[in-house]
Amino acid sequence: MFTPDIEKKSLSEIEAYQSARLKEQLLYLQTSSPYYKQFFAANNININAINSIKDLEQIPLTSKDTFHTHNNDFLCVPKNKIAEYTSTSGTTGSPVAVALTEKDLDRLAYNEYISFACADGTNDDVYQLMLTLDKQFMAGMAYYMGIRKLGATAVRTGPGAPQFQLDCIQKYGTTILVGVPSFLLKLIEYAEANSIDLNKLSVKKVVCIGEGIRNKDLTDNVLLQRITAKWNIKLYSTYASTEMQTAFTECGEGKGGHHHPELLVVEVVDDNGKQVQSGENGEVVITSLGVEGMPLLRYQTGDMCTYYTEPCACGRNTIRLSPIVARKNQLIKYKGTTLYPNSVFNVLNEIKEIEDYILEVGTNETGTDELLVHLILRNAQPGVKEEIAHAFQSKLRVLPVLKVSDATAFNAIRKPDVNRKPIKFLDTRKQG
Image 1 (spheres, rainbow, N blue to C red):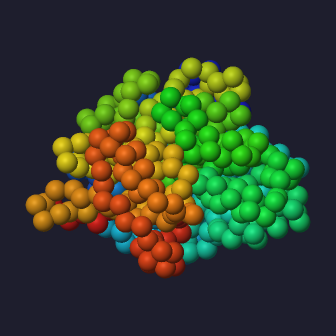
Image 2: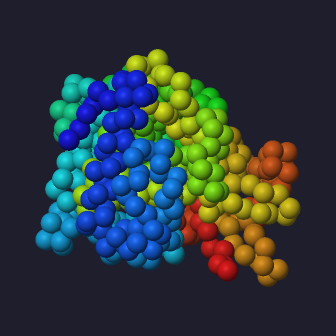
């Protein structure tokens, strides 16, 4: 089923391989997917006319709204073949089911196995999973299965608790952390407060999830600079989603997340669904390969990035995705300025007195976007709010409302018992 050496084949060999796999997936959708059977008929699509991945542009896109509204119709197998239910947040905030068969679970384990291997992992490593492994969270389960397939050791610590995390690192000789990069700042802060020399610990690498560590041009962003200024470790960026059941992971070169062509077809498209040129921003659109339970065809992720086509020094010839520069539905228009959350995050990450933050965008009485930043400050000195305000005015030329909160009020906004990932962006805008 899997062809792990395909990443190092020529571009023409990769395209031929993907085109053959695509035809198999289209036939499966035609015969097994209630949604796509109706979709092909309604759009007069003859799947026999789709002979290569270049022909995909003849097929309309599948939106997140469609997947969420018609969720059950995307299921291609009888319910007694479902081995696991996972979920992802829907466009209205309610969870949307993603069902996996035993075959899909094997595929998921393989995906993380090759992803960890791409990020220079070996069977000698001890991985510490600083993330949620329950609440139908696909990623936590996938990481664990991938580590087992790699033959490495897993330490399941869950999120938070800096003292516990550092105790486990010292006890088990952890060599690779898997977690949210901003949490590393809390580990650093705890270590400094307790005279722990991080650079004498066994940890050498971090596989980063949930947050970006690079700028669009692949240079280190502020978050990565703050971490590596205090801790001599190597960080690897990843990008994935529950719906695609696949990850794009950096190799040691740090030049973008590698595409695994045996697992999906990836396009980066403009507003008309046409492929953009390398270096141009577009939306990530994926087509599943080898998914049995709920495969997707030209699925719009809503994530905006660019891609690179030149061969990587690691020997892989697949395209690489840049960091996600924006999410399509998160565009903010505030006081005449258009911006995305990442630009706000970049300002906040530069200010060391900020321990944590949540950016909330709502609708004011005039019907326009209103920006509120909830802040937790560490050792707040007089003038910190003024420093933050100055940073916003000088870098973004707009000033959101700044609200300093205590931990109780802040966590009530974040709703930690509901969310499986750390919430940095909260969109409460009225729709319509």
